[in-house]
Image (cartoon, rainbow, N blue to C red):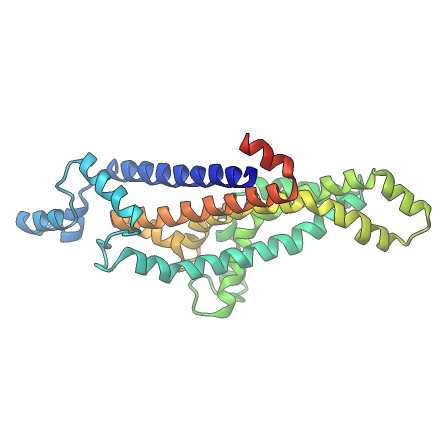
Length: 311
């Protein structure tokens, strides 16, 4: 019963977050200057054409009426029709979603493959020049703007060295630069957490006992230290999964990657309300479900969290 109560509360929280984000985006889009019907029809279009477009997409209705209709459609997953392409929003999103998931998976792999060894090595070389260098890299990675890094990588590897494509997804190597760019904001906290937890575990008595027993250094590190240090790292990893989805908006725009992030930006400029609302809804839903999965994993590992959430 405690587990059901815990999961039920988290599920309600997911619904509240997704609906709140959807309402906020609805209001924000309506606050942007410009008439989407006029933009779609063209500035030289006659008034009757503009009115037909407004009538078709319900833009003549008062904002509260538009909001109610929008929320009603959300519960049936009817995300509407794109103003730009005149195609169902859900179809376009499902077409773009695999690109975003592919990019996020590649970025996550790079972040873990580099962040964990980097943080572990810095901890094992504590207070050495290597440790200071890694710590500085972590600080730079945390503070560096994603769009700036992407542009610098394009300038170096695409313009100067001509080794990798500058954008698009037509070549298998096209994912390398955007994946590296997206991985950096995730890699930094993973490396920082790994370094910290390694240092804490190295102070534990069971590690000192393993060393005193004469076990090889590699055995102590991989069998005793690594196993216990990875629990907090996995926690941070789960939290960073949602950040990948947020960072994808900027990264996909910089590299012209055909994912949901770029779709959102293009639709904002085109005043394509249904497409922006639908894409943000899907991104918010994915983000909330990831957090729900992380919370559920915590509860499975530590029953105290589950019991506290159900009280």
